[in-house]
Length: 68
Image 1 (cartoon, one colour):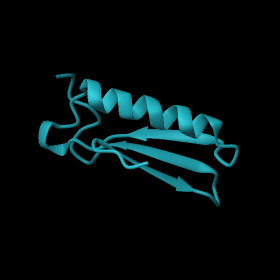
Image 2 (cartoon, one colour):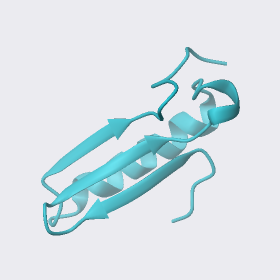
Image 3 (cartoon, one colour):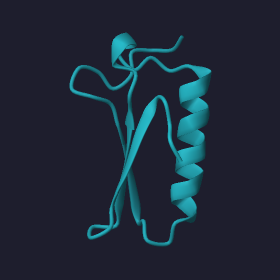
């Protein structure tokens, strides 16, 4: 699935998925769309038997600067 406000990547060798917040223009401030995308991604990854860990991250400037 394509997301507008997060980036999801899976490293199959290490069995780790990375969910990165991706709203750099507002320092990854949380909004309803980002939260819904993150919920969908995390639920999908939770059901993936090839994934053993999920890392949630921001970018180099901020993890999340509050909420809109």
